[in-house]
Image (cartoon, rainbow, N blue to C red; front, side, top):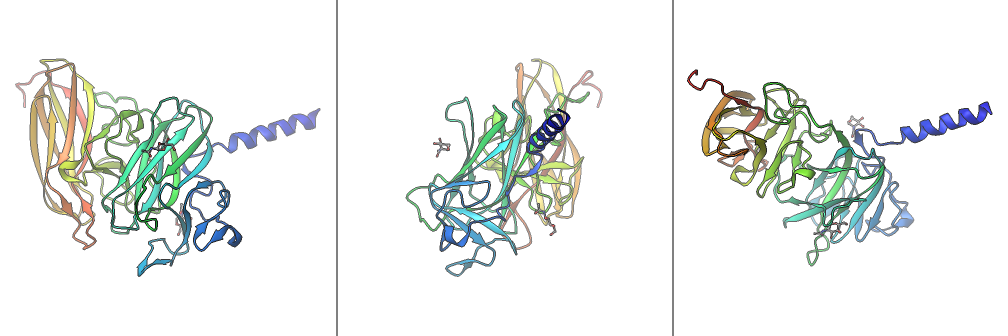
Length: 371
Ligand SMILES: *[C@@H]1O[C@H](CO)[C@@H](O)[C@H](O)[C@H]1NC(C)=O
Ligand SMILES: *[C@@H]1O[C@H](CO)[C@@H](O)[C@H](O)[C@H]1NC(C)=O
């Protein structure tokens, strides 16, 4: 009797423990790979050859040091990655908590000059046509790798996550490399006193891999319910970069956003306002201390007002506070930020960078005649 009880407790403990914690998924770094008999060259020929993953289509298992033509594929030393050929996908099952919002992060590298995309989806999912298309257009890091993130609500305690390369009729030898797949549970931040915005300091966002120095991209054109940066959405065509204080200069707290794609990416939040009332939008602009130098301009929009705020970057980290005063013209106001110019790092990597925005607050102005 006692033994059975202990066994039950043990069983329960094992089940509870196997639920996904923040961080790398089980074999999320693909260090466990196929047996030689499950491969043909670099191509994986058995659907279940990579532990914890199920593959479909043309998937390659790539070891560091491997070349394609004269190009060295950018897999870190001693590491492995998978490559998704056209219409190929990888799938994994994870135990999560139903009703919790999660963000998925993974590291990728493009291997061809052509534009590539990835399609991330989860099931079960009650919404039709619900997936995220992440464009891998531009290089933002100097290392050949970037990271992407995407958010979803867990509709069950066990979820399938699929990463799919939707490309067809392209060069079959092309397709992105993928490594380090991780999850993080995101808790809706409380609006602090004295700020009408949600997550104005960007502290609640996707997992950033501790060993990576390039932050993580927040994808463009995503609906609110898939934004891994809670409260915020990215309008228009290109991503913004989410950065951490471990690797970058961040004006406040541990996280901030770098506007890496000029006028092609805007960071926005919609907030309830009272028409006719005056508000101040207060924020920090600065640089991430990542060799991104020059005269920067951040454009802020609210109500009918657009204003440009200059910042001179020496690329060594710094920030200043800025303020946009506006009168609300409707019960909902969209506040938006973008970078007027494109910037490139001065390290000859050709990678894009830009001004940093952080610590955004929206407050009602009681007495507009005071400064
Ligand atoms: C994205 O993936 C989902 C699930 O695998 C699939 O149903 C959908 O058709 C894909 N979308 C595109 C545009 O390829
Ligand atoms: C980070 O790097 C350290 C030292 O190289 C290594 O021990 C650790 O496993 C790495 N962590 C991840 C998540 O790759």
